[in-house]
Image (tube, rainbow, N blue to C red; front, side):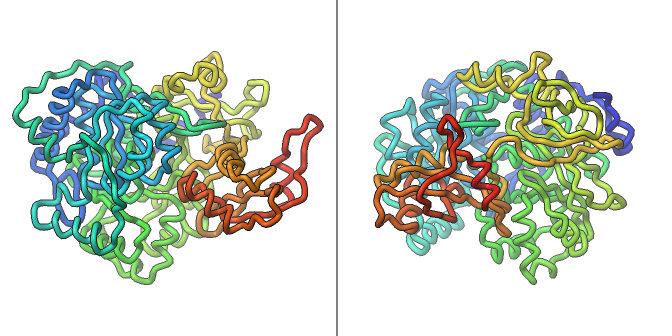
Length: 554
C-alpha cells in the first residue's frame, strides 16, 4: 500500500527512524541515567527515585544476578504491581543481559505455572502479596532463585514500615507463604554492592522481553521482542510525541501496570529517553486515592484505557484538578469511546488521542496526531514512522484503499516470532514479513486506519485479552459441566464481559458455584460475569460449537 498517511504526519515527525541508533535498550537507559542524573525518574507513594539512584540500584541488582549465575539470555520473571522495585529489577535484568518475562500479579497458580515453564525462567522477583501463588507451582518450574519483596521495601525505613504494616495487618492482603531459600530485594542489592559487575555486550538480535500474549489465537505464548524491536518502538514513539513534549520536564502518570506492554513501552521506556518522571500508581482501581495522588503533582502526560478514563471522569473530584500542565493523553489497549474522548477534552482541555498496537508490535503501530484542532473521529491513527500497513483479504491479497480486510503490519518493531512455536510464527507472518494482526479494518483516503472488528473470537476486557479456549478449558474442569462455549458481550464498565453457555451434567449446578470454580482457575478479568444454562449448543456439521451463533443470539 502506498504510504498515503505521510501527507498527514505532524510537522517535524520523520517518515523513518534509525533502528540502528542504539545497540540495545541498555544503551538508551545508561545514556538517560548519565544525561538526567539529577532528575526524578520515578515517584511511588511519595518516594522519589532519581535517575542516578535508579542507575546505582539497577547496577547492584545486575551484579547480584551475575553472582548467582545468571547469564546473557537467561530469563528473569517479574511479578509485581507498579512499585519502585519494578524499574530497578527491570533495568538490572537487562543490564545483566537477561530477558525479562513479565507476569501479571493476579495470575492464578495454573496461569503462572504455564508462563514460568514455557519461558524457562530461572529467577523471579515477586511482591509478597502474591508469593503464595508462586509457592504452589515453583517446584514444577525451572526457577532456582526467588526474590520476595514487600510493597514498602524501597520507600525508606519509616515510610516502608508504615506501608508494610498497613498491607500486612490492616488491609490483610498478604496471604501466608513459604518459599525456602527466598531472599528479599535488600539482601540482593547488598550482595550486588560488594561484588564487581561484568559489562555484557548486547546486540539487536538479543532478546529483551518474552512478553506473553494469546497472539491471534489460542493459549498464552511468548512474543519474542528483541532489543532492536523495543529500541525501534521507543524511537518511533519518541518521534511522534517530540513536538508536544519537553526533554527533562515531563511528568507522566503511569496507572496501567508496567508488566503490560502498552505501559512498559509508552511510559517506562519512551519517557525514559525524555528524562521524564514516572508517577507510579499501584492501585488505579482506588479512584478516590488515585485522584488524591494526581492532585499532588503537575502531571503533563497520562496514558490509559477507555475504562480508566471513564472511571476518572465519573468522579466529581476529578474535574476539580488543575489540568494546566497536561498536554498529552494517550488511549490504547481497547477502543476509546467517542463520548469518553469528548468528555475528557471538555474536562481537561486536552484531546484524548487514540493509538493502536499489539504485543507483537512492541506495541505501537498507529497513533493519531497530538493536535487540539483534530476532533475525535474513531480512527486508530496513522501508521507511525518506519511502519507499513497493508489491508488484505483472506487469500493474502491487498484490497483497494477504503475496502475492509485484515490489518497487516510490517516494521522494525514487529516481533521476531513466538517462543518455541515455529508453526504459529509461520502462520501469523506472510512471506514478505507482514504480520497478520487478526483485526479487521480499513484505511481512508487520508491514510487514517479504522478498526472494524476482530477477526477471531478474542474478548477484550478493560484492555486485556481473554481467549475463549482458555475460559472454556477452565469451566470444563468442573465435574458438573458437560459442554461449554464462551463469548464476549458488551459491558458499559469494561467494554466487554465474559459470558459462558453451559450444558450441565449435574442439574443442581448453579451459576454461583461455577463462577466460584472459575475464580480458582482464572485471573479475575477472565472470570465469566454471565452464565446461561442450555439444553444444547449450536454446532457445525462436524460437531464444532458455533460461537458466532451464540454471539448473534446474545
